[in-house]
Each structure stands twice: as structure tokens, then as C-alpha cells.
Image (tube, rainbow, N blue to C red):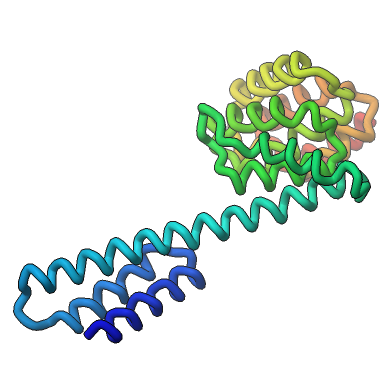
Length: 239
């Protein structure tokens, strides 16, 4: 019986490692244990069942934590390499600094992997590392309000950071307040606003319009019910 239970436990852990789903792995574990222990239940059999179940849960949690840590480390190493331009003398210190940004904030809207992915995107966009903490907090605020994917939000903010040459935390807070107000006043779902922006973002960079005028014009065109193609045409005509 002991060897059969061990086989069921290992099989379930392999399924969890492959599928990354506790529920999918727990079903064969319970099914296997009930099959093995199908005789009349006693206190000792119940103890065997519970010990196996607890062992599975703890090992699954451990496997999950190891995978998260490994994935986070890989993302941060890539971000650090981009920031330091692969300068080995600075790589470790920058990577340590980035790890601090991965600590879950009080808002708790972003997990460690999500934060690491956003840090990597900020690094690709050449945003100053000193702005990462406020940028991530701003993403959390906008995610809470809009329910839009964090990657879309951080790329949205990064475009404005670059065009406006944002250099301080105060400027980020002021910018986010303005952007939130525009998004909130536009009578479309936030995801529609972000999708329209992603299709027209080139006009933010390559246009005579100021970032302030650009975002308000985008809001006005969405309010009028213009499609994305119509919005693009309007921006082209206004260049």
C-alpha cells in the first residue's frame, strides 16, 4: 500500500508541475487514494489519507514557489542586463535593486512575477530606474480602477514618460491623475480606451500635438463614437 500511495503522490506532483493547476493535480490524487484505501475506513487509514494530502499540498506549494522565484530571477536578470548594457561590474547591484521593486505593495494588485514582467518592459523602454517604484504603484492604481491588463497600462505610461521626459516622482503622480481623469470622463470601457491608444500611439510621438492635447483629442473622438480607423485618420489629417 505504501508504494502505491507514493506512486499516486509523485504522479500528482508531476501533473501539478506540468499543468500548474492545483485542482487538476488534486483530482487524480484523491481518486488514487480512494481507490487504494477503498476498504472500510479506520482511524489509521484516515490518518494515511490526511498525511498524504498534506504532503502533496506542501510539496505543490514548494514547487510553485521555486518556479516563481526562478521565473522572477530570469526576468530581472534580463532587465538588469538591458539597464546596465551588460556591464558585468554593475549587473549584480542593479539586479538587487530591481528585486526590491518586486516586493508586493500594500495595494497587492500585482504579484512578484507581474512586477518583474513590468520592470522588464520599463527597461526595454529605457525608463530611468529611479522612476520604477512610482511607475509600478501607478500601474496598480490604474489597474484597480480600469481592470485593464498591467502590461497595457505600463506601456501606455511609458510612452508618456518618454514624450514628456518625466524625471521625478511628482511628475508621474500629476500625469497619472490627469490620465485617470481623461479615462474616467470618456464614455467607453477603459479597455476600449487603451486599445484605441495602442493603435494610435505613433501620433503621440510623431505629431504636432502636445501629449495633453493628444489624449484629450483621443477622448473626444471616442466620445463621438469614432472607430479606431476613423481616429487614426483624424490624427493623420491633424499632423
